Image 1: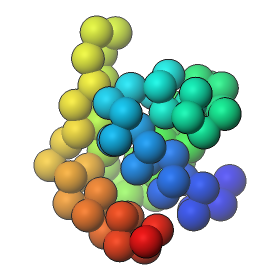
Image 2 (image 1 turned 135 degrees about the vertical axis):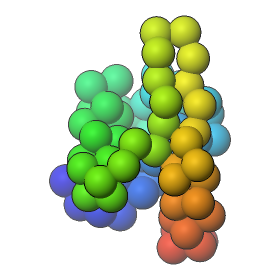
Image 3 (image 1 turned 45 degrees about the vertical axis):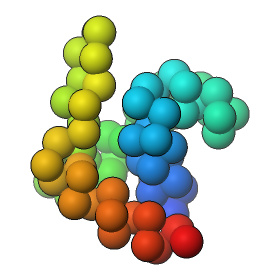
Image 4 (image 1 turned 90 degrees about the vertical axis):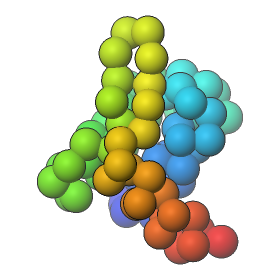
Amino acid sequence: MDRLHELEVFVAVADAGSFAKAGNRLRLSPPAVTRAISALEDLLGARVFNRTTRSLTITEVGQRFLESAMRVLN
């Protein structure tokens, strides 16, 4: 998976507040969104979202990375 795609998925998840909603916006399956975020987290060596079955919150690392990702994509 390419890094630009992972950035786009990450920003979409952060904006939507949900893997499923981001997947719908990007026309990706939930597993594809999960794979993209997992690949990004592996690359960064840190979690960008805290996720449970009921909630999704961006981590401090994720918030800092989001600012950079948005600059790259704009």
